Length: 197
Image (cartoon, rainbow, N blue to C red):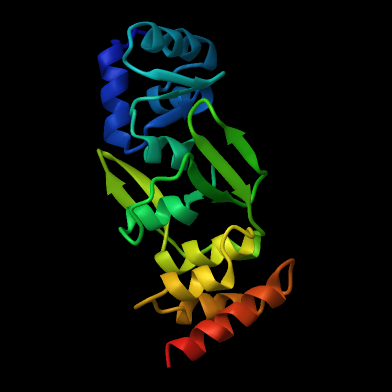
């Protein structure tokens, strides 16, 4: 089987729309064994055609939001990072803040923090195309509710930042949620509904 040029592998990655790969994902992309792909994997990093993020993961993009979305899956960008993306705040958080139903984890060397959220609260985000790839970002309403769920925002924060927001969809989704923090979220959403009438 002919050896694949590194630029061809990079181009295949760009064409796929994905930017962050582990060895198995790259092997699937190029149609080679994991052993052969490991050699390509290391060469791509050596030639600076990709950056090593962690052991066994590389990125063809240096965009922090792309890396944050694709490094831990499933996840979406939320909290202050999402509010910044939506231009609701101009404060740049120290780390990119994400929500995931998997486990809370920090990659401080990459400036990314993942907060564990209950799987039933893993909703309220959209996919955005960016730099030949994609990111997942919470809707503004969900970013605020996530912040309240994680005890990062107070009810006063919610009331002051929720101008012109519509929590109808979030309220519907949370109506049947009885997990941790469910009562608190429902009370906050009831307050927000009164404010908007």
